[in-house]
Image (cartoon, rainbow, N blue to C red; front, side, top):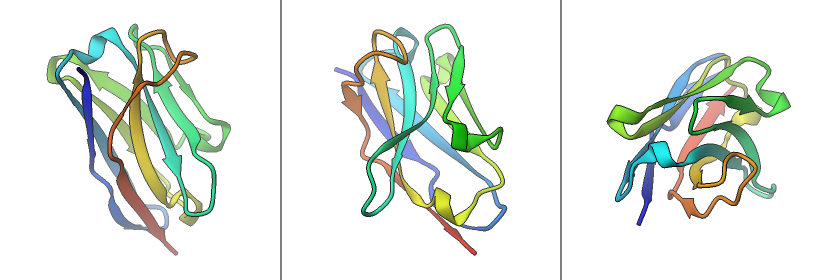
Length: 119
């Protein structure tokens, strides 16, 4: 069974950067597309970025070149590098896995990591 664990969140100032990690255990990540999602208090969960098994990526419009998703299959880890952070990026960030691709069903989720951006 695939298990995911996020790390790398924290408190950062406006314009700062963070790199989130999504580490897998139980199965190998290269069999899955991995997505990053976020949920702020009182708001619905939204997709941020996704990377396919083959390494193709897609990002939400609000990312606007600020974030980059990547994967290191040797380390069984997917990363989300976030630059130029804004207070509206404050949320709990989750990674999830889908065997069918970025348009598939994300069935395995991590516990999330909190990102807080201060102004």
